Image 1 (cartoon, rainbow, N blue to C red):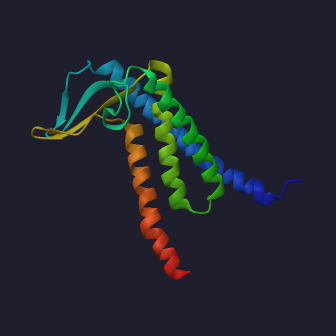
Image 2: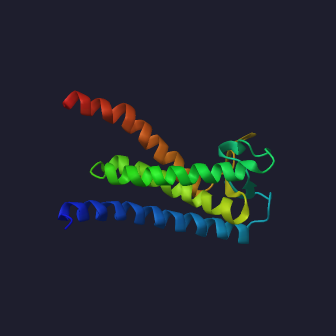
Image 3: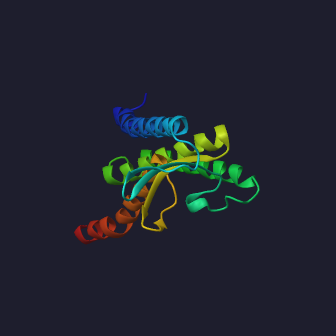
Length: 169
């Protein structure tokens, strides 16, 4: 008979996975709205530094490998699936560390959100464009934002929080 600690551990993991699922739904909803409401490659200015523009990225971050001929789609699918499995395992293993789990959950949500695009349409839908004068950041989406914030949290955790834990321990 499993102990109640195992069930409690699983319920904590399920909460993180539920948050990831919610973020994936929001990501897919915003991408759906972008596809329905924005003409491809026509910028819709919102602020002096922010526009909406519909693009399809067959590569990874910053269009890395976008022109690789198609094999990269399945390469990035495999990476996303592998990362999702690893992150789910890490969420279960480190569930008492809420900061780490939040960072992992954000990365998981972003990976799954972009994975859905790669599997269904062969490219990732990007629609947020940030710029200043003639300088443009590559277009991105909510999933990309989740991955970026989650990665920053993991870096912070690795450098700053681990040092403070070592100093206090």
